[in-house]
Image (cartoon, rainbow, N blue to C red; front, side):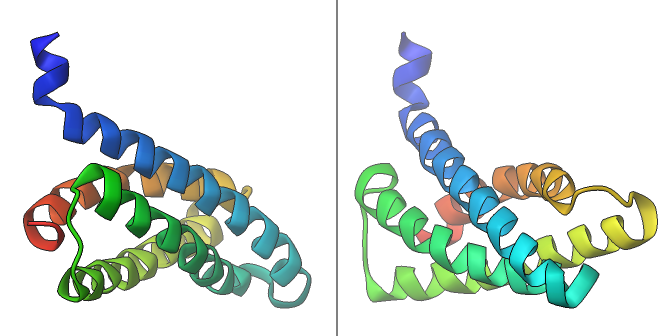
Length: 131
């Protein structure tokens, strides 16, 4: 019980990030299907940007109200700098892995890439964004 109390912020973050992650994958799947009809592998970039814009809006609201319980315009700016960096890293890794290593559904690759980014993101948000 004590362990849960000590890690409450992280547990709420897991819910916040998990639900954002599901939204991001859902939006990515939809956009990748649509853009894939026209752009092939390059649809990964467009799909990542569109999905991340939508899921990050949701994620920032949840994080600022329920996880870290802080909000300022400076935090919003830092958060979106992190979103852009994470979006770039995610799309590049998914693109490269999908095109050169494993030619499978991009959503599957994105799932594993973003899991790794999820863990890094928690510590970055805690230390640098919502401090």
